[in-house]
Image 1 (cartoon, rainbow, N blue to C red):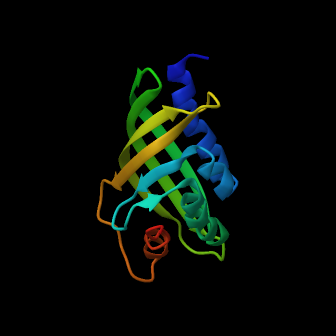
Image 2: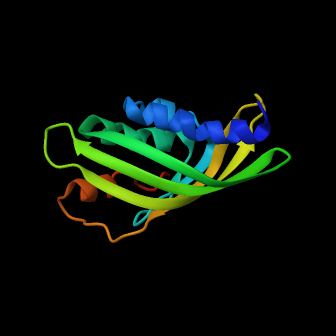
Amino acid sequence: MTDREAVAAIEDHIRAAYAVGDAAGVAAQYTDDAVLMGPNRPAVVGREAIEAGFRPFFLAFRGELAQEIEEIEVMGDQAWMRGRIHIKVTPKTGGKATELRGKYIAIARRCPDGVWRFARDIYNYDHATPTGRSILGALLGLFRRSS
């Protein structure tokens, strides 16, 4: 597998973990000191905080994630990726699904164990998102700044 393919495979691993509600599986694709930056909330710092943020989401929702990689550039032990995301979120208690479309840029690093992981990941949506008591409001409120 080339470095480019290994970097692209990070998305495959995240998508697979997302499909089964595996917070640890999603977080495993991030470095220990990763920073995840989503819309309308503080950055989440560290693999443990990323996992902790996904846990309540996966308890309450089923998520379907699709990514379309538009660019990848590998430079030694670092790489960046740009692409599009489509997320479908359905409450486990029933109710209407919410769909989100957006874009992202991620910076990956080859870790000492030779595995590529995201070190920085930022994304936002192409549309306004509802807040308050909606499904999306709950989703947007999941992550808090780690200490």
